[in-house]
Structures are given as structure tokens and as C-alpha cells.
Amino acid sequence: MIRFLQVAQTLTVHHGALAFLLGINALRASEAAAVRIEDYAETLRGHRVLHLVGKGNKPAAMPVTVPVLRVLEACRGQRTSGPLILRPLTGKPVDRRDVYRMVKRIARAAGIPRHISPHSLRHAAITNALDAGVPLRDAQILARHADPRTTEHYDRARGNLDRHGVHFLTAYVAGV
Image (cartoon, rainbow, N blue to C red; front, top):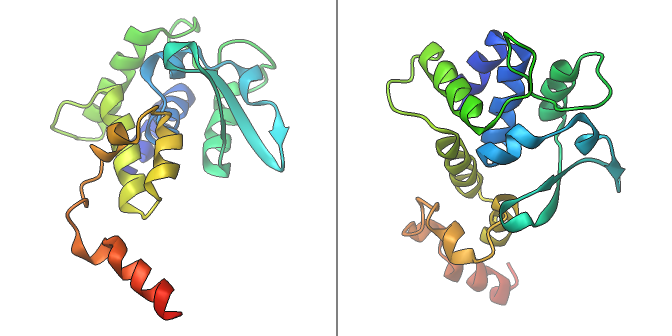
């Protein structure tokens, strides 16, 4: 993921913004393509917030971290409204198919031999969050999954006995 994000920023500002929205904010391809400059202009309780409409026409809001904001602002340039990510050659807004092509181009430039899709990046973002110790409920909110069982499928460390809840419960009960 780190290599993918680094290389994306060297291609165009549009590739960089797309990579961060997919790989850090875990957006779906259609959601990333639909992001408008106005969608992340609001600050809420001290956080810059990205407003989007997700799967099933469900509105969602998520914080935009400083690294993500930097690439979004670089992509925005001097524009104050309209679609954020544009086709690098034509300047027209991207669609879902363009998102797939841009991801493929970044992966090729990064020397990633496997097939990488926008969903691969979403999957990696959720998996990386769980691997980093983000609680399942918070990872579910990041992924915007209605059912926590869907998010559980992304957890590679489910069988890790070192992270088993019994350790935390024992420490809590023992007052440690």
C-alpha cells in the first residue's frame, strides 16, 4: 500500500487523490469518482469531513486526515467547486471505469505484479486498519458495512491468540 500511494503521487495529482481515497478512506470506485470539491469543505468538531453517498444511497461522513487532505488539495488546485478527480489528459470528470484504469496504471508504475482493482485497495485499507489494532466496530464504520460479519471477513488475524479478548478481560478484572 505504501508503495502504491507513493507512486500514485508521482504520476498526477489526480492519481494521488484517487489512491488516497481508495487506500486510506476505503471508498468504493463509484464513491471516489463522485467526490466533489464541495464534499470535503466542511469542518465538524475540529475535523475536516468528507460527505458522500455510499452504497444503497446511504449518506456518510468521514474525517479527512492531514495526509489525505494534502493530496486532495493538490488535486483541487485553484478550483473551488466541481468534481475533484479529473481525467489527466482531458480534464473531464472520471467515472467508475476511469477509476479502474487509473488504479491499473498506478499498480503497473509501482511494479506490482498482481491484479489490483479499486476494491483491492478498499480491502487493503480495511485489513490494514484491523491489523493496526482498530477495533472491529470502528473498522466497520470505516468500511460503512451494515453487518459486522462483513468486516470480520477482512480480519487476517482473527485466529491470533495474542489478540484474544480473554487477555483484555483478565487484565480488566484483575485491575491491571
